[in-house]
Image (spheres, helix red, strand yellow):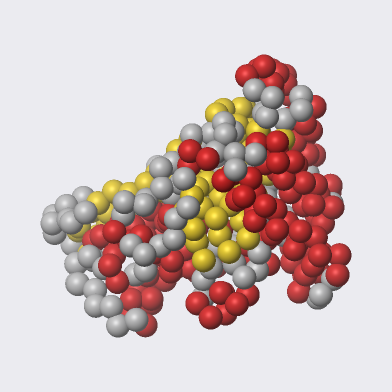
Length: 357
């Protein structure tokens, strides 16, 4: 899409579900992820005389009714809103363009954001804001054709790393590409290319899935810590289990191609069981474990969407099982809704030459 100088540019980036293989994306593994329209973040860029990063009226609140109001807000929402994410993306985008001899025009802009992705649900709320902002800048500076599709997830991740956010490329790939994507993060690819091999898949391969999340989820940003250290130290147990997790995505791609839903359900359950064996119940948290248990009690397959806070469930036995799952979630106090898969961006000119299955 071409924009005139005075155009207002807006982009959305959607929440992400890790279907299989997570968290092996940060361990040279494979994953299958889905971009979903249930939740989204948006960014808006308007040309302006000065460069202005606009705080969100709710997420970047700095005025309170009382000290008690401030403390309650910090305990429920945390210290940080999205302004820091926008600023970090601006910095990374500028440095990338400078390092790659991409000329940027002198125009300034006002950048703002909005989001309805629930906090700490493992649905990639932070990266969605950054992804939407990147898309706005690519269009404002008219350099979309100069920044390769497969490199954009790295820019989003680099912006988050600026802020000390620990994560892998999986979420950012799903949000850049949209739809259903198989990702291969082998060490060879990462070392030689600087990114993985990303293969969009037909979303019609997916059976109906359900998203389960808690009103007050645990922090999804603390789960990787001890496992990451043990993996780096060469712990044989962690290394072997993480390889198993990575292989689940490979098996899952075949199961989707063959519409083998029983196999898919088995792989989803095994993915969670492997994660649990590596991280332990204390790290995963009671609420997160309860969401999986509620789903499994009615025979549904279930695993985390990310590092915790939300669960993706599949009912291989059909509508009656779905009703049982909905009743069980409501009784346990969890929110459940059908997964709405975002269309892939296969028609985007960025994707010329990309593999597709």
